[in-house]
Amino acid sequence: MASQPVYKVIFHNANQVFEVFARQIYQSDMWGFIEIEEFIFGERSQILVDPSEEKLKLEFNGVKRSYIPLQAIIRIDEVDKEGTGKISDTAPGTRSNVTTFPLSGMQPQHNQED
Image (cartoon, rainbow, N blue to C red; front, side):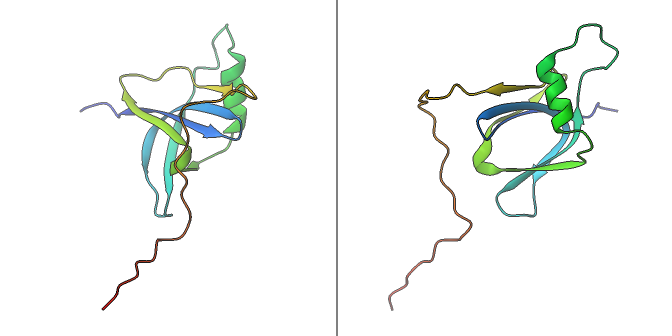
C-alpha cells in the first residue's frame, strides 16, 4: 500500500509567510478557498526546539481544517516527506515584484447585445 502524500503549502497571512505541511489539501466548496487538513508538525520529543515551528503549532493548535483564500497561496508542492514548518515575517517597506491577483467575490457580468 502506498504511503499517504505530504503537501507543503506556502501562503501569505497579514505581513507573514506561512509554510505548513499537511496530508490533505483540496479545493473547497466555498468559492475561492483551498482546504487544508491533517497538519503535520515535528516531534515534541526533540531536544532542539525551533521557535518558528513552535509559533506555527500554537497558531494551528486545535484547528481541524483551515480555509486559505486562493489569492493568498504562493505555492503548493507534493513532497516526499514532511519538513519543518515556519512563519516568516515579511520585511516592512520592502517592495516585491510579485503581487497577488485581485479577486472579488462577484462573478463578472457579460453584456450581450442582440
